[in-house]
Length: 256
Image (cartoon, rainbow, N blue to C red; front, top):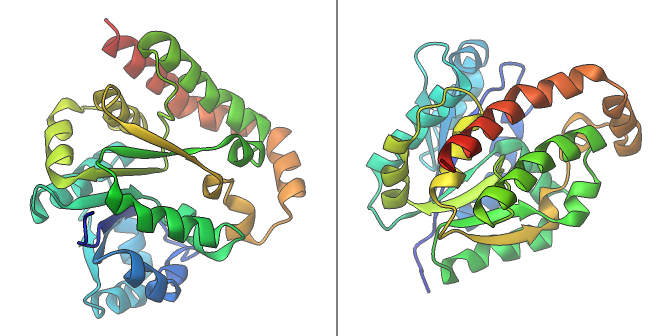
């Protein structure tokens, strides 16, 4: 068993401070789970929320990386993950995760399951991918589910594995992260698919309910009402296609 607490690595774009106040509020829970949280803040977030940024910097538990300029989302992820891979020993476990998903997991009915799953990770060898269970997927809008599910289906046909290529929580070692980064080139969300494709033959998976749809919780909305709105909104389809199509391209190229 690995007795050393893992590190959480979170890219954050939150200029309106919808998520950041929760980061400080969940501090006691995070300190039970992680040795430190490395956050990468977009330039817009740092500019619009200087007080919150200063508050994070005053707590030694948080390591704050500020992107000096506006960057494409994939480039921001790569910069943060490059820093993470170089900042810790090669065998250090890193949880590549997203603040909104963590906030939801800790504040919802899934809290106990989330805490138990993350505590048990030390007994497993990375890479480990936490995937959305069928129950978790049922909470998502149907257009969201079907379009991301298309990437999983194509990956299963190409590689023989049903992986969540648009992943939300991946555990790797710093050494594994350092190995995959030179193999990535995408500057959009398909950067996540590049990482999953690289590890496809060795990755372990765990299907979890705590990766249910987080937006209603984050925005204080009725889940069924918000789900119906998004299912009826063509803009949501365009939003999902903006990263699903590049992810399909990543999978197709990797299968050649």
